[in-house]
Image (tube, rainbow, N blue to C red; front, side, top):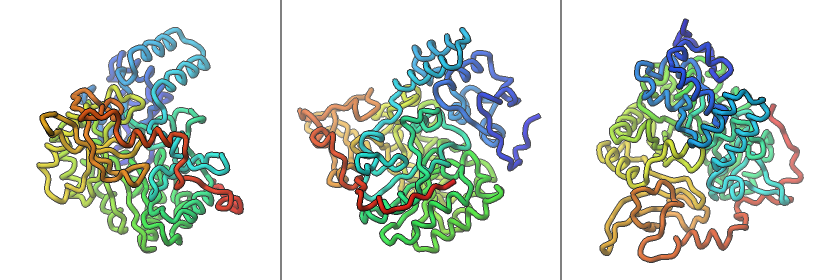
Length: 460
C-alpha cells in the first residue's frame, strides 16, 4: 500500500529500497534498468512526499518531477551508459563497478567554475575545505552534517558531494574557523550555508553554526540554500524540531540581520500542495525572506509559460523571484542544456508577462569561472548580430556591471562556447584571468595570524 501522503515521517527511496515503492512496479523493464545504470554514476534519492504528492504518475515518463528525481538513460553520454550497462549485465564485482563509476565521473567535470582551484581559502598553503570565497562580500560554508538532501535533483551541479568522491568534496565541522574567518574579513557581508542541504540537519546543529555569527557587526545577511520547501516542507511544519527551527529564524531576524532562505523551485507542480503553502506562511511569519531560484532545464521547464506561472505563484505566496540559472557544465548538462539564445528568449517572454513585483528575477545567468554572467539581449550592432552579456557578479569586483558582446551562436550552451564579437581576440576578463591564473585572490586568503590562535570546535 502507498504511504499516507499526509504522513510526516520522512521515508527516503534509493537503489537499496526502490523496489518497495508501489509506483516503481509500473515502470517498464527498460526504465528500471536505466535507473539502476545511471544511479551507479549520478546520485539518486527521492522520498514519499515527492512520490505521493508531486509526481503525476499518469504522465510518466514525461512528468517533470519524475525527470527531476528519477535518473533517465540519456542523462549519461551513450558511451558511458553502455560501459556501465555492460558492467551491470556482466555482474562485475562491486569494486570494479565503483572504479568504472569514478572514472566516468571524472569525465563529467565534477567541480566546474574553479571551485577547487580558485574558490577555496588557503591557510599556510593548506586549503580550508568546507569554505568557498569567490566573491569578496559572500562566503559559502558547507557544514559536513548538511551534505545530503531530502531528495536529489538529477541536474544537480554539486552531485560529487553525494557519491563518495571525498577528494573533491566540500565539507567542514570547524565552526570556529568559519566564524573567525568572517570576523577577520571585514568585506564579508553575507554567509551562505549550502551543501547538500543545510536543513537536513537538526536545529541544534544548525544553531551551533549560526548563533555565533550574530555578533559580527559587518555581517549583514545569513542565507540558507535549501530545497526543503519543495522536497520536505514538513521540515517547517511538523518535524519534531520544526518550531525550534522557526524560533532560530526569529532570533536571527531579531538580531538585526536578514535571514534569507534561498529556495529552489523547478516547476509549478512543486507549489501545489497545502503543506508547502503552510510552510511558506510559517517561515514568512518569522521575518525571514524567501528568495526563489531555478535552473532552466530542457525536459522540465524550458517553456516561457512555465516560468510565468511559477513566478506569479511564488509572488502571490510572498516569495521573491531571484534567479533563472543556466544548467552548469557538469554532470548531465548535455541532457538538460538549453542554448543561450533560446534561454534569453524564454526568459524575456516570461518576464514581459509578469507584474513588476515578479521582475525582481534576474537571468538567464551562468555561474561560471569569472563570475555570474547574464544574457541580456540579442541585438544587432553595426550590422552584426550579437549576444549581449552582463557581468552581474565577478571574481574581480571591477568587472561587475560590465557589458560585453559575443558573436551570435544559436548552439552555444555555456560561456566557453562563445567567441568575442567585433574582431576581438578575447573577452577582457579572459585576459585578466589568464594573467592571474595561479594567484589566489587576496580576499580568500586566511593568514596564520588570523587562524592559528583559534581553538577548533567540531559540530557533532
